[in-house]
Length: 300
Image 1 (cartoon, helix red, strand yellow):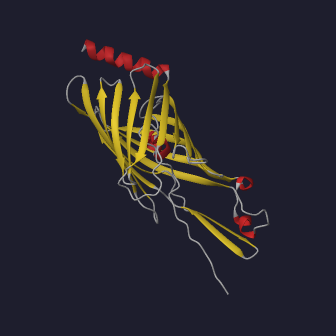
Image 2 (cartoon, rainbow, N blue to C red):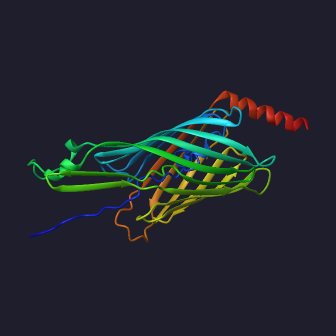
Image 3 (cartoon, rainbow, N blue to C red):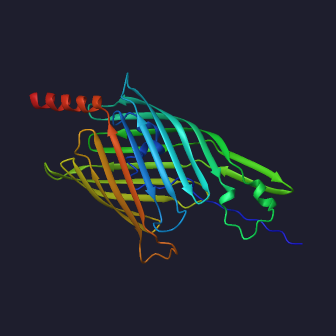
């Protein structure tokens, strides 16, 4: 008799190059820390490969009222026949520690989803396969927490976007399948070092940890010109290097483009390149408050 089983372990969240702009996906405490906006991100991994990973993000934040802000986060990560992601409502509350330092606390509540289109599988034969009976779509609740410390020249974040250890079990014709959504821990940080009135250096990092899978670290070094244009390079411990360009000078709109490629010295078999874009629309109330603050500073 032959007994055969297979154990598969992997991280479930995509890795965005523009993680600062998508921070609401990872950390609910980010809600309200940058005013009211709606942001959209898109990541196309492994360029030129059919059915390669495609990730889409949407983050919406309201303006602050009585130190509190509400937000909405959506993430879709599609790979071949599988589309998994999350949708959540975020709440953030600000504690002012000093004139230029605020501690934001947040909570995230929503659901994780997973949809698998078995009809698109490229099967060798169309004969019935009892193992496929264990494959099913699901919708599970999520609950997460986070903290985000923001000062004039630096930020630090720590969060678990979903600490519910959800486990699914199914048995069909004696074939058993178990899947578990394990909590992910995220730590982030960055600071701004002003060289002169025109140029500042702004390094940042995102660290992700989950049990039974390799830890992920992404570090990016950016040069900021007059707070209008950012040029940066980055590196990850998955043998990928990256470059990015972001425009921040417009009153109501920010956008950027990133490019990621595998290092030639890497032993990884697949080193296809990745493209990423982000767009952010800032609401008028936020711009008006910013202009008033600058005007008051000039008067002082």
